[in-house]
Image (cartoon, rainbow, N blue to C red; front, side, top):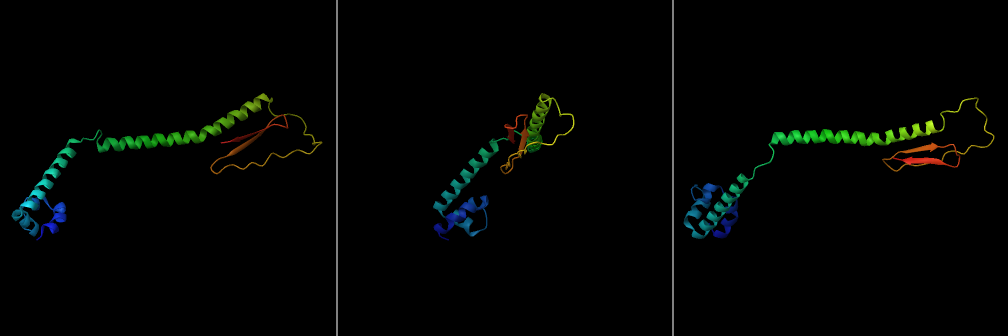
Length: 148
């Protein structure tokens, strides 16, 4: 075997081959070639340094604790999303209640025929993923349009 052919093989070799202890052509070459033996020893030393460094790194949480924490955060995120969706509805209901109370409630008495043509509320298109509420006031010139 030639050294140039062995270099790529050394990078993927088993530790026993790098030490020259296996019964393979690569292992035999490492035993007989000083240059390839030096490369194999360097690879072995660096792999050992990497193994030592990885062993020294300890996770802050166990896998079980991390899974529990992730599940709890997902539940909390789901609750927040529900409240974020309900907040505009609650605000609209509160605004409608304020308007209802401030105008004295519904008008009682017989319904009168309008003497003039009633203007229709404006046509409002909501942006995709949004909703629109239109509120009429006592003043026919004022209309509240709320996008949420």
